[in-house]
Image (cartoon, rainbow, N blue to C red):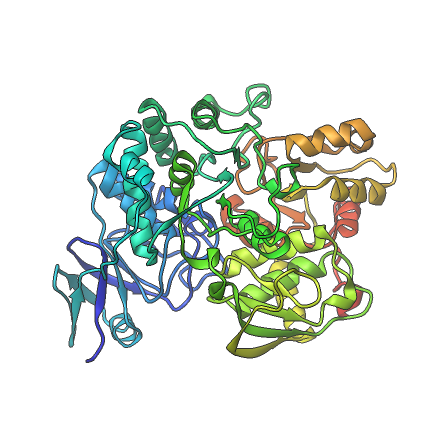
Length: 558
């Protein structure tokens, strides 16, 4: 065998191998309390990862996967080792935090493709410092390639503790991740967005309060993602203190560190949205993809915890899509454009594009004639992030960097037949629904107006809940849209998002729900345990009135 392994984080492990060719998002795809895969669309659905050597190409989806992995390590529900074939940042960062701050080691390795393929076929393995041993397989383990990180005098001072132990800790983590990414230096960033404020697991709170107690403070303007409760109203909503209390403490810890209590997963809707070419440091997958794709800003898909380290130092590794070449499309997807599409077309295309380009940036061709709006592109980016690990995509004739195409880019198609098949996967639930869920990611004012127009003064017959950011809600209140929705019986909630909502705010009697979100249609079955129906805003409005999801395909797919 000519292959080898590269040690990313050292350690020894042995155990049964659980292998897959499909990446997974640890957040929304793995239950940290049990270590089982809950993504119903994944080949490993229902399987336990606890104590097993997980062999998969990489991860995809949410930046919060680092917190999920950290919680699994701290509660002895983690895999015995993580083995990848591709560069991976999210759960690697969770393992790094476990070792750096809590003294818990979890080996992380990256294998050449032939070694990866051989190990994936083995039943069990033993990982040592120098070799991986499996049935009929002996893979040498090489130490990480060393690159000299060129630090400025200010970087060196922070690393040496001149600004306190919290900043020194942040710089140690940042430099370790820069080395993992192959960066040769750090760059200044103008703003941050924190994703680790979601109470995905107790580990998120443990990390944040430990950093806050050490005196951590952000030094660049830093917004915050949606949190897991309505910050000011969770008690009156019946949320148990055992959950609401820690979730609020987590949010408050980040505010204590100087973050802005924006509490939205759509920071691109704020007045502070970055400009084309601006280097920023955002976490939250949909926000990262939108910033790179639609705004032309530059940010890696930073894992939870690294987002805070960057915000505390104002520095990020110069790697990945901060550079020009990695922003190139490496797969061209020709999309068949049906006539008379509605807004459900866009999240469906994002979801299919991610499946067609799970490990690379695609260029979508054939969509310019449909003149996608910012809301349409928001839906594309959010759904794309559930099925692809790429931090951006391009849309020919629409997005600002669609001219960036790699010379060796390959080609594929998304056909009407693909759309029908995808529609059926996302509509596995029954026709009768007990809940309509809008706002994953947080709804824009335009989406709220469209829902109000679709309801047209009719009162909803089943719970209909919209999640939106505080700034958007203030604008809707001023223009009267909020009053229109509330008069129709729609509940509009700030701060939390569908991907972090819990009972009893999530109506417990729900057996099936309908959503216009491709992101929630993908994650919802695993997160909520309910069946899902998916469709456009007009179809969601009709379901809210009748309690019935459309039985037939949308007219543009018939």
